[in-house]
Image 1: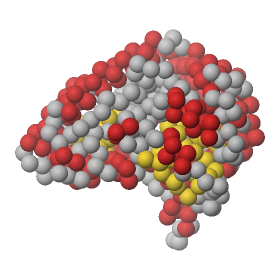
Image 2: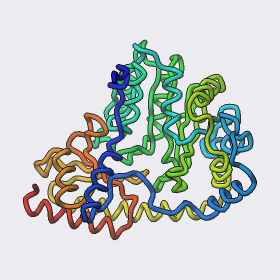
Image 3: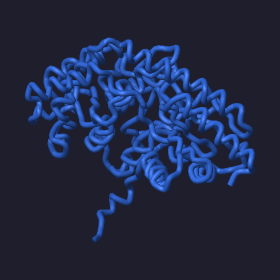
Image 4: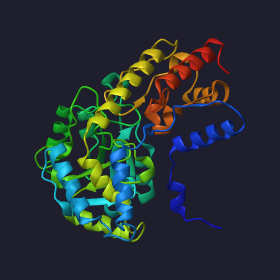
Length: 389
């Protein structure tokens, strides 16, 4: 079988590869602490499950419009208008089976070979994968630890060229937990005022923030018309397995994204959409409690990692990841990832799985219990104290 050349340009998401290796070790009887996968360990709130059950009983088991159930699109538009401070309309909303589609579809609709896309490094690996898949050219902008893992806005603006077609922003950020300051977003927005450039703003962690409010670049003058807001239900509502996401974008682009959905997934599951609408209306207390627990876990893992020789870890302002520098251990990111999994029984991700700027770092997800985090910290400390390997 001879594959299409474009398949050689398609990357992967290392978290699932490490998860598979960890699961294989567990089948051999090993005890593994999972800090590799970015998935809340909380149950989906009961109100959402009740809404899904009721939707199934009410017959939401058939095809629905490809862009989403009209009432749910309207509910999403209301939610985005309220949380981003913009006027979002239902015709600008496309509901998809998972938020990754709002990376995939707009890129397919917008990008051609020769176009350039500016994206964060380290960053979610699917960004670069999809840029390359379309034949466009990836242009990384570094996120440096010295800047709390946010980009230098002047450096980003300096990467703009006549071929720049798209800029990808992610805040709060995976894999670092960094949050882009509002002033930096405004700076970028000013420099895009007279350019034919779209922005894909990945805001899937927008409600997992500590001690600050979320700011979207779409709120700044002239930006709503050139911004694709990506969000979904997976992280905020512990609904990763429900596969439900949405994008808000200019209506003409929404029409093209809908066409791509018709040609692929047809539509997001109807009963999941009804449950998603209920989630947007639910009491926010369970979400606030989840974020408080994430903050407790964050403090546990940051303090613990900083007490281990060779680790240097910032305290992230959002999401549920830490991204410690590990060069002081004398090991590379890949070496330490492998040793921790195979010898210490701790699953983590090498930082360079997220781009060249991640070399010398590891990503740990603290979407697990404090007990598991403390167990992992003890194993890491013991492993390094024993000389590694």
